[in-house]
Length: 186
View 1: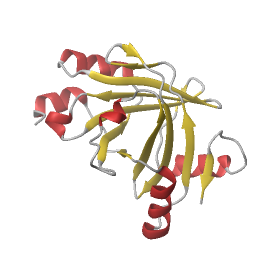
View 2: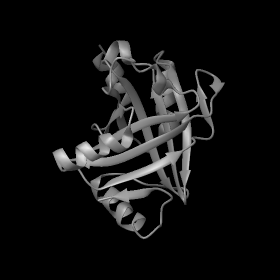
View 3: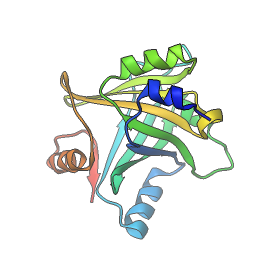
View 4: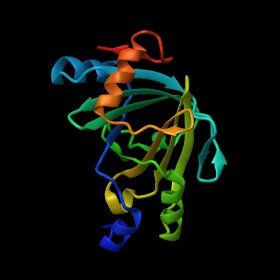
């Protein structure tokens, strides 16, 4: 359990994302869309560069799908190739919560605070997509929190981009006119 003094030092914002590792992203998106009515979805295939996992450079290719359920973003991740912390997911589980994500504007400061608290980084990477940069870091918190904690920082060029449902839907509208590499599923 994370003590209240640690929570105060990390100054976590409200929950921004719940991430799942899935075997078949198309099938899972279809279920969320057709059964639960979750839409629109932004689908991407990405190779985070650089991507450092426990001090070692790795080169995974990930299929990622993003959508919102209320104020919380849902992220589905399918590892297409390479090594990734996502493959440490239990083999007998078709899907379960992998991480809880927090949208931050100061990822480096937060990672410094984690280091001082003895919280290790499992994986840290950068995804770039036509002017957008997403820096992320997965923290080694499964034993304490029941899931990996992720810090997520979006930028448009050099400007911080606070991602919420409104910004996401605006990006999806722009993406439907081929602004993004990924595809939009409505």
